[in-house]
Image (spheres, rainbow, N blue to C red):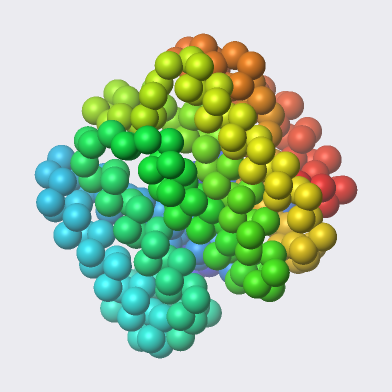
Length: 256
């Protein structure tokens, strides 16, 4: 799969992430678009059928595929070919393996046992994806804690916005959907952002394109904490103008 094909896939399925990534340097795009396309393929596998066992089988294929990628080989697949720069990277394979395992929740309609279970899901998906992207751009081990904390909080912001759609598909996205519990969850996400920002100096500027995908997270979580009723109403996102303004300001200042 060519870089342009990866770009088109992300633009169609994940326009917000595309809006951030297309502003990055050519070198960064060559790394990020294949990673994000791979993430989309894994996520789609969990929703490929109404039969959970079929989805589990598809995810198992991806589990085996990313493990093979870490060993330096991979089954023939267009997206895996585009991610050839990850071949032989055991650390990347471990991150992707955790992401695949977390996606097994998507196959079934079981609720999360508690907020800790939800956070584990967000840490492995959104947190892991952001760390994989930042790592591939050149962030060192010292940045991992901050990037994962920020990535999991950004994943929560996106998750809350997806609650109505997930519920419509028969899923139980929140362990407790009451307004008080939603507000508490949002505050926990804001605390993670604060923790990550306190460690900002550990994250090199070269990794900024990976973190900018979470540029709206703090604003979204602040609204959810103050007005949790917005969740059911589907009004958590800000206007497109406000979102683009935030992204432009953070890209210029480097303050994620």
